[in-house]
Image (cartoon, rainbow, N blue to C red; front, side, top):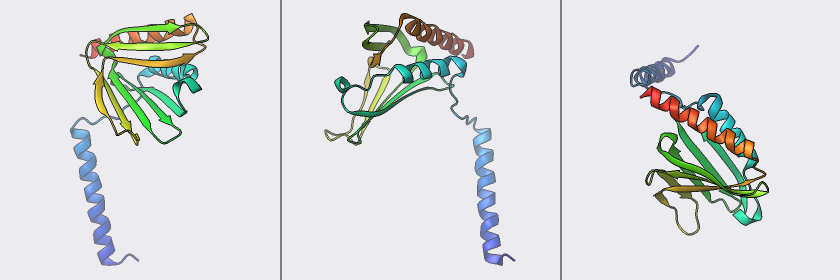
Length: 165
């Protein structure tokens, strides 16, 4: 049997959870799923082609996601614990181009103005919160078909975002 005091506490906690859930539902809170099939394709391709070679520093992990709201997110974690985080709205893209060969190169995302959020954490030189216009991502083994797939899917996401507005 549950003691009266703990029963009252359990009911209070349950009431708080119910009220919180109702508030989130009424306020329009939505989870951030990936942006459909196009977003999954881009993220999978970039996660596979991303270069973590010695020319880019001792990167232990990097990951790409695209949310249902059309945000491109890129995170790089270095072996020393420093992490870099980049994010921008796909609707703000002005240009995407590739500099390099099929062996290695850089995929550059350029926005209309300082629309790319740049944040660093656990940086020995000090943490950074700033904005940028360009994001350059090192790639290895990118074929023309891969780059065309990225471009086509980004354009599809951009059109979907325009329809939503």
